[in-house]
View (cartoon, rainbow, N blue to C red):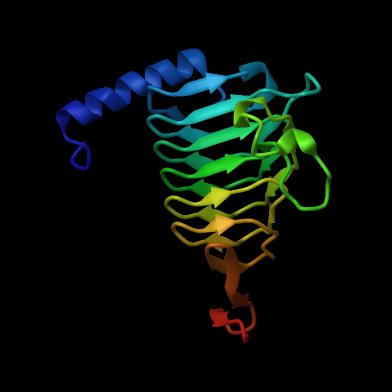
Length: 198
């Protein structure tokens, strides 16, 4: 109780009771949260959700499209949206204000000749495109990270605050920047993070 204060402690108890009643598989939900498409989400076991978390599942194929592993901790104002597939592994820590989405309005890869993604078409009217996202076990996403469609983040990786992840990040690395790039790799023989040579 010393770390919370009286009113925060009362709020915590209230949230725990609501969690048990509404999301029994979860560890703790700090309400309010916004869940859309709940039947298409696998919450895993021991999930913690922060205030204002927004999780939206609108599958194109009427199948589960968001899956959490066990003991995932998601902090305040995180937004996760999927129409295809977002898989988050065990023991993942997600800081506040992180955005993860497997889809876009339109296609902008310079490969597909898609007149429906033209700037003359209202963005909301452009057809949705998607690519699966995989975040493996023991990943830590820092404050304000953005994960874009088609990305795989390897186990044990740390993504620095404010980074925008546009392509795969190997396991056991630290990646930062916009676009994010790996700058350190963990050396299991010396037990330290080593800079990656340019």
